[in-house]
Length: 398
Image 1: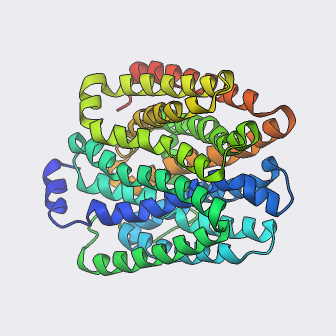
Image 2: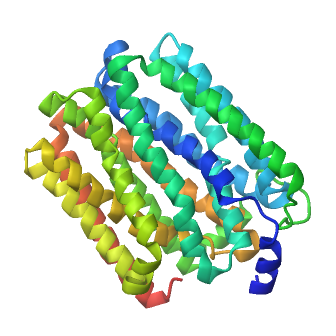
């Protein structure tokens, strides 16, 4: 896609603010579980590792349904698909407030994950359609500021509601707010044309574009890398809130604010993204980011001091966005003619990795405790960044 085409399309496009508001709610809905996992496990009388099924129940369909939404968005319009998905997401989230048991909560989280899958990846693909590559890292960085605010407030609100109100009320609040955002998206979508569409019949079961992407070495390395990132980073991070509660008996509201440090690191990244890209380059961002996350996990496991968790979580958040935003930016350029498909495969890999990782680390936590979980995650992330930089230099990713 030439820059002139992109600039022409960019004269009339949905604002990053509208897209960011939808992304904010999706991420807040994911992260609100972190401080509440222990409370939900106690209410339904199951172990923390068993209660984490609600994490996998959300992230696995979130990943799987990328394979549907990507081609669908490319063919009938990314904006239309995102708006419909936001409505379904709002309803599913609100209904979670009324579940009588963990089985029904798990089912609703599964359905909500299906709907949420159509929002963030298609937003990123839409940004890719409307911003030239030299501006895209900065545009995505600004868009990600909404995501990190969702991480910050999702964890914080989860802690507040868990401590003083009810974990059910937060889902009702999120559902109502999300419905309002869906209405705003619908109104804007009617005025803004979605010109970047493929022509032809919509084939939801056509996996040929994904196969073609995975035959390309550059695409394959990005997709594999983000799967490993999701498995180890977020698979282990799901248990940090329960770790703080079990290890130090910290109030849930405090846990929520402590977990928000990860999002603060993301805000720092979004503020200095242009400087970091110019200073470190893409390989440097991956290397430094990966080591920050590795050091963070190992320090949490080794140094038994809860006050250290706050600066460590900020550094881990900064490291995550340095590495992940690089992967994400490269994913938007894997298939310029079908960005929805490429970005959806990227998100599929990330969230399938996260869902499987949360389930796997749940077994580790229930059988051997939290420390082995964090040590394994830290070492794996360090190995990932070394492997990725090596292959990037060898085959020229990006």
